[in-house]
Amino acid sequence: MTNVDQNMMTSSSLLPEIEHKEVEEVCNLHDVHLIEFANRVFCPECAKELTEQRSKEIVEKETEAYYLKEKRYIKQSIYSDGTLKKATFDSYMTDDKETAENKQKARLLAGSYLKGETFNVIFTGKVGTGKSHLAMSMLQAVNDHSNPFKKCLFVSVDELISLLRYSYSNKETMAENELRRLCVDADLLVLDDLGAEVGTITTDKSASNDTARLINAIVTGRMDKPTIFTTNLNSKQIHKMYDERIASRIFKGVNKDRIIKFTETKDKRNQIEF
Image (cartoon, rainbow, N blue to C red; front, side, top):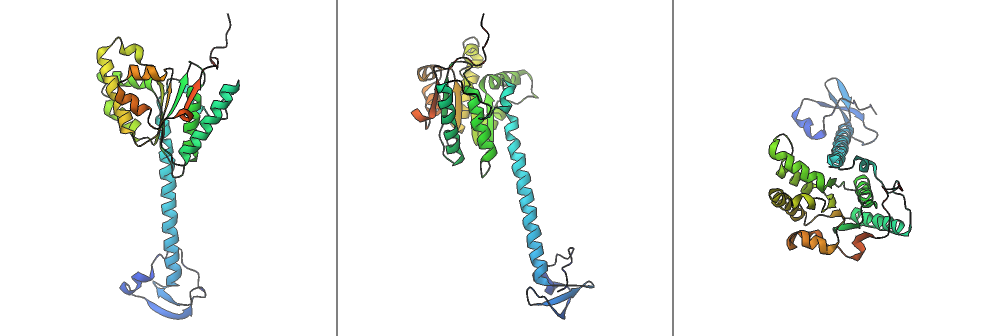
């Protein structure tokens, strides 16, 4: 059989529309007569298969490029602590029974997210116990292993509010609608350190209203998507700090197995004794 010319992409469906002729030689693979066109001889079925294969390769390549681009969604994350960018389950050190159990819980919950389950998770407890690290570890696991790919995002609430305020005087920064859309569009979102803005709220009435509006818009827009919250607040404090509608949406799908508490773990960031 004559080799198919790699530049000959003509399919058999187009042959009636162009000047060509059938030759005596037969394709050993498809048992059809070869075609002579533009001083070249080829099998129309081989050419058709080659066209389909190349189209498939182009689609696969474009799909891969799309996923690689979408995986950069996590790079739009907003951190108050840049070291969290590299936080993973492997780098989370378990110092006691509580941290070991909480790490295992977080792994299992990340696995549920990978299966497509939709529910919120709340990390709660003292400062410096590793809540943000474990939340980011869950996010990284889903970002790296989900199929189909999920857009994952980590957002520090304190930094989010700072950006919101800064946008009032600087029009070149992300405005409220853009910040909200970024958070709502994520397939899996971590809202880190919920309640950190409470101090500023009590001293700035205008910021209080805007902050509540933004948090409400985000949790409302994510009613059908999972969100991971980290906070130093307990359930009573969350209900007291936010209105019932916001609190209800924060606790969407949350049960005792989806609340990860740190009550005994010491502050991992404070190792200095004096």
